[in-house]
Length: 216
Image 1 (tube, rainbow, N blue to C red):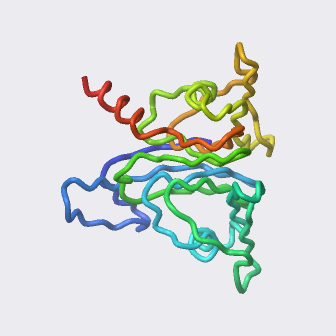
Image 2 (tube, helix red, strand yellow):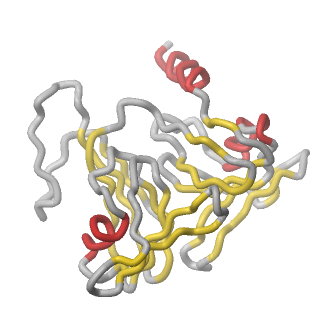
């Protein structure tokens, strides 16, 4: 999965975005994910322009994507909106910072386009698996194990990324003295995290400390 973050005003030649700045403080940009045939794990790091997983996001792929799945932390399973041709079965609402699994029949590009969210991403992890995304302001995180080290309050011992070639999750596991099968991470990368307790990550206070340390 390759991504490109462009935190600047963007005008796409194909007409995907047309924006007029009404406030100089607003930042309009995009994150790009390259998806292939099969399942692809993507995220919505910019302000979400869609309301529905199927009718809005899925339909924008003009028939190339017929399933859009979201990890339901309460059910501990994927909730899938499926294209029946005349309607999307089990459609659901989506929002900024959602991680989604898209099933595609051909290679395509997926763009999260919009305003940069005013507040950094923050996720409420449950006891069990929760989908998250590496926040856009956390370029300091280079490895899955580093994320796990910040989540010790919840007893996180597994962090998984989707491998589109293997069509399966690759999991880094905490052995106590090392993270087995650790892998590199990047901003806007969707992940599945296993926690033994409910926690919030990252906490706003720690994000403010990181922001302040970068400014000094």
